[in-house]
Image 1: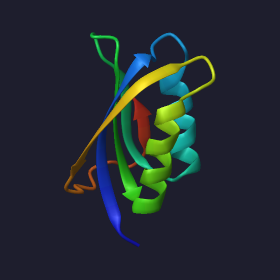
Image 2: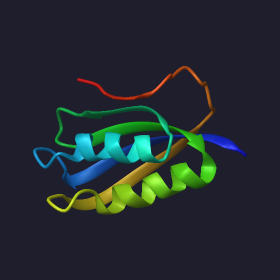
Image 3: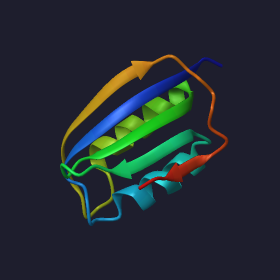
Image 4: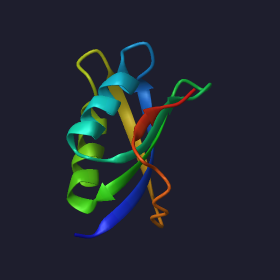
Amino acid sequence: MEKVRAHVIVEGRVQGVYFRAHTQEMAYLLSLKGWVKNRRDGRVEALFEGEKAKVDEMIQWCHRGPSEAKVTNVRVTWEDVEGEFDDFSVTY
């Protein structure tokens, strides 16, 4: 299975709607590693590592987000896998 790494920025109404908590839950379900955090500019930033199909599924979920969110844009930058994460965490 091919491993990939995606650096993702999610725009819209994505803070104050439990986006990070839901992202962490979804990442656990997909066995992804990395992190998610709120940015000062109102966006959410995340880094996902794992099997390509599962990272792709996570990115598709980011386009929807939790029901309270209103996602307007998702930016994805593909990076080299570094494998430095043991789990998926919410960072501050």
